[in-house]
Image (cartoon, rainbow, N blue to C red; front, top):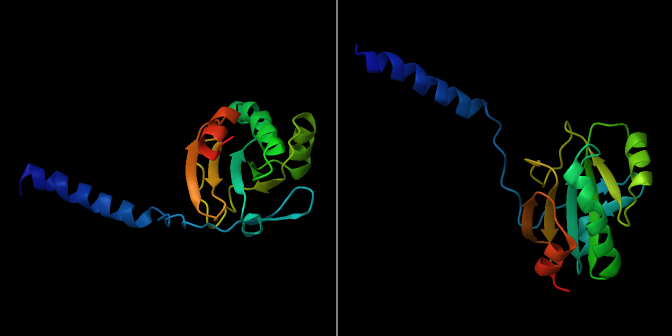
Length: 160
């Protein structure tokens, strides 16, 4: 037995074991579903937003870039009748703490909490925050953005 075979065999076995142990993430559907209860107890259903652009924005109370982009997203939604948004607080905080945060950083769009142990079925878990999905009026994903968005960037993607 050569030195190479002594090293290669365990490496191949380890790689195979890791491939089976790693959770496979299914591809995100072209037309994702999103049905959540917002912090104010109402229901947000992405399918009910057909005909509008929808900004699906993952954020957290501790995320500085998230806090910086929230006023831009809020202003954009307030000034564009064809645009809706849902904020997804990707946070294990108590809902009361998120509500207190929103009292200091208000937005015009609804916010729901998504906890780490109960990820959304049709949306990939964020690989960084903020993470934004821009959904076309037909319900398909137009853009996936990791990092902050600005009103100018939204206008460039959606239009004035």
